[in-house]
Every structure is written in structure tokens, then in C-alpha cells.
Length: 243
Length: 264
Image (cartoon, rainbow over all chains, first blue to last red; front, top):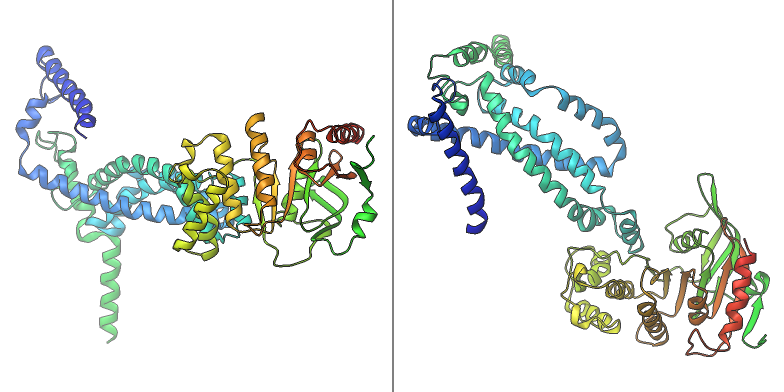
């Protein structure tokens, strides 16, 4: 384990050192590119909290999306009609940029956890789906014939052949979508967040250097004005009025 | 020509034999617009070793898959005397699951039959006995990638025997192996077919090697190029054990070679 960490660690330190050296030698002003030392100096306890919040959002979205995508992939491979019908829709959803959808998510779901989690899910779902479908179909036709000659059921074919065969595909997909999950969470926070989150720090120092746009606008879009809560309030009032 | 060593039976006399184990009647199989097998009839009796011989791509494998019920016939039928006849299948490729050890690969048919992953100790000991039979006792815990091509096919044979078949269908089982390994494995196949430790009594094998067909089989079914039709049903009368250089076998091989050439 130590040997595996050593090399990346050394390269990370070298990169930081080079960054520091360039900033210092070229005398680049902090508002253009702060040196690593300046960034570390500004780190406080709130960053850790916000980091944790973003991480948890990303993790929950990632887990739900991956599980859903894998379930979908099994259904797609089992029932070909589903794949034919739903894959184009999945592609359409994927093609819509997450930055375009994120503000809508805030309007629909509010500024709380769920708008971020759904943003993460939208971005994580597709890579897992595509790779899992590919992996579940990866076993040679001859292997399936072997299972047929042994009298295996469809469920056994999935459990003992297709799913184990799919695992390498699945893990490479999870590798891709785990990093996308962080992007999804930050985009979700970017367009609407009630309080402190990582995106405050995201563009390092920007909000500290007098650029308060995001926080205020998101508060205006989100807060109590989002459609879903409005609709629920209205329905609740109607119901109460009828009684 | 040695008349004793070579008797040729016509389709009609083969069919008229009493109660064959497997009877193929007027079989026709097609894939989309390609006719793979056309009007084919022959029968296999209990205890026989029958080879299907023909040019590669002629539909021999399709015929074998049809007997295993993997491919439906377009016309005609494949009749089994006993509907509970157990049929084992062995492919040209070993098709071992790479994440399972040799022993676990051999146990796969049992797991599938039981419907779960729980395998009792008697199955374990039976799997070990199968591996012993094919000479792989020392490799029960090896993974497929650690085995040579010949060993992988041995493991596949043990797996095919694990489902305790009456009939074994072999689709060029050792075709991808080198000549020496192939000869050794063919001898072991005959030994397993002849010994009474297993239920196995009948073997149908696809091959495109004339010496292999003649050395192993009681009968050689010679087929034409696609669509596969029967050229001749050759009875190999040479005494066992045989080798490809037996003087009795040579004229049979010559005769079959002439048929294959002329059959196109």
C-alpha cells in the first residue's frame, strides 16, 4: 500500500512545488493565480465541513445512480424491447447539459440536499448504464450455449455468467462516474444552495474577493419560491379549506 | 481392399435397425436464407462412437447443436428413444469460467442442476474423481489461465462428464490442440468411453480429421459441403485399440478421403 501511494504523492508534491515556484518567480498577483501556500493559509474549519457536505451529496447520488443504472442494464439486456425503447431517452437525457438542468432541479426540488443529489445522479447514471449493458453482453455466445446445454435458467445465466463477466466493465464505469459525481454535486450547489457548501470555495478565493453573485441569486431562485413547495402549499390550503 | 474392415451401409438399412438411441429423420435446418442441413437421415445405436465428418463449415456443428436442442429443425425430427436421455456437450473451446478454479468449473453443472450454489461433499468428491479421470488431480485449485490448452480441454471434459451424461456430443473437442496432445486426449476419450465408471455409453463427435474419425469411431457419417447431406455411412470394422497407422485403417481412410473429395 505504501509503495502504491508513494509515486503519486511524490508527483503531487512536485506539481505543487512547480506551481509555487512559477507564481513566485513570475510574480503573478493573487487574484489571477494564488500560490499553493496562499491557498493553504486561507483554509479553515468551514472548508472541512463544506467538503464533507459536498462529498456526502456526491456519494449518495453516486450510490443511488449506480444501483439504478445497473438494475436498468440488467432489465435492458433481459428485455431487448426495453433497451430499444429507453436507450434513446437515456441518450437524450445525457445530452442535456447538466448546467442547463441544474437550475430546474432547484426549482423543482428546492435548495436542499435533493437538488444536488439528483444532479449527481443525472451525471453518474449514464456511464454506468452504458458500460454495464456492454459488460452484460460481453460473454461469448458460446458461453451462453454452454449454459443452455447445462439447462441453466435465465436467472442462473445472469448470476453465474453475465454478472461476473460484467464486473470489470462495471468497475471502470464506477471509476469514471465517481469523479463525475463531484462535478455534479458542485454544479448542483452552484445554482442554488441555502448555506455554506464547497462551491463557495470552488473558485478558490473568488467569493472572498468580492464576487457575491452566486450566493445571492441562488437564494432568490430557491428559498421558499420553488414550484414544488408552492404547489404543495396550495394543495394543502385547498384541502384545509374544504374541511 | 479389405472387405472385413470396411462395410458400407446405406441410409435405408441404418434406419431399419431396431430402435436406435437417436434417430435423425429427414432433417432440414436453415438460418435465414442459408440451408445448413438438407434431408439428412441417420441413426445412432446405444454404445456407438459415431463421427460426423465433412468439410469445415458444412453444418456438422449445427447438426450437433440440433441434437442438443440448441437449434430447432425447420423440417424433419430428431427422435430420442428415451426422453430422459442425458446429453452432455463439449465445445471446441474449453469455455471455462476464468474466475473459477478447475474444481469449481467442474462443479458448475451440479450448481446449475441444484439451482443454488450449495454443493454437498459427495459432489465434491465426484468432481475430484472426474478430474482424476482426465488426469488433472494436481490442478484442482488452479485457475484456467494457469492451465495449458490441453489441460483446459481436459477440465472441460471433466465438466461435461460431471453432468453424468448417457450421450456425449463433442464438437471438434481437440481441434485447437497440437497433434501430440490431441492423440493423447483421443486415447483418454476412448478409455473413458469404454470404462464403466460412468453412465456414458454413446459418443457423437464432429471432426474434420479423417485419421481421427477412423481411429476413434465405430461409424463415420460422411457429409457434403453446405447444405450438409449424407454421402455415406461408413462402418469402421478395425479391431481396437487402434492407431492411425494400422494397416486395416489405411484403406478406410483412403476410401473416406475419396468420398469427401468427390462429395463436393
